[in-house]
Image (cartoon, rainbow, N blue to C red; front, side):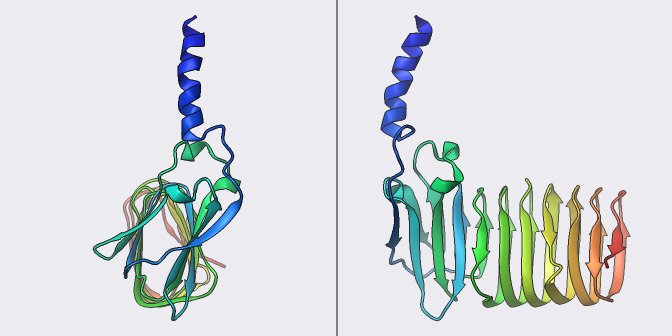
Length: 237
C-alpha cells in the first residue's frame, strides 16, 4: 500500500516537471543581451564559440526546454544554466547548445558538465578557463598572448590548439590537458593531478609536480622542475 501511495504521489510531480514529456522539436532562438566578457557555465549545457566582429547569442534545444535555458547577464557576467527539471536524467540528444559569436569574451568559469568547442580560432589578448568543479571537456582553438588554464577539482579535460606567448596553469584532482598543438613561448605549471597531461613549450618552462600524474612536454625549453611526489616530467616524441 505504501509503495502504491508513493508511486501515486511521485507520478504527478514527474509529469508536471516533464520527466515523461517529450522535449519537443529542435528550435534555435536568438537572444539579445547586454555586453559581457565572462561566462559562468552550469549544468549539461554545451557551448560553441565562434569568433566574429558581430556579437550574438543563440540557444538550440527542444522547444519544451527552451524557456528553461537561462542566459542572464549581470555585472558583465553571462550565466548559462539549465533550469528545467530532471535535467540530469535527459539523454545527450536533449542537451541544450548555446552558440556565442563575437570577440569580447575573455573568461569562462566552469561548474557544469557541458562541453565547450570552437568553430574557428578565438582571438583575445588574454583568456582564462577556470574549472571549479566541471566534469566535461574543452576542445578550443585559441590565439592569445596570455592563456590561463585552471582545473581546481573534478575531472575536466582541456584540449587546446593554437598559440600563446605565455601560459599559466594549475591542474589538480582528476583534471588533464592536452596542449600538443598549442604552442607557447613560456609556461608556468603547478601540477597536482593523478592523470597525465601534455604541453608544448618553446623557450622557458617552470613546473612543479605535487602528485602522481606525469607531464609530457614537446619543445626544447629551459626547464626549472621541482618534484614533490612520484609524478615526473617526460620528454614527448
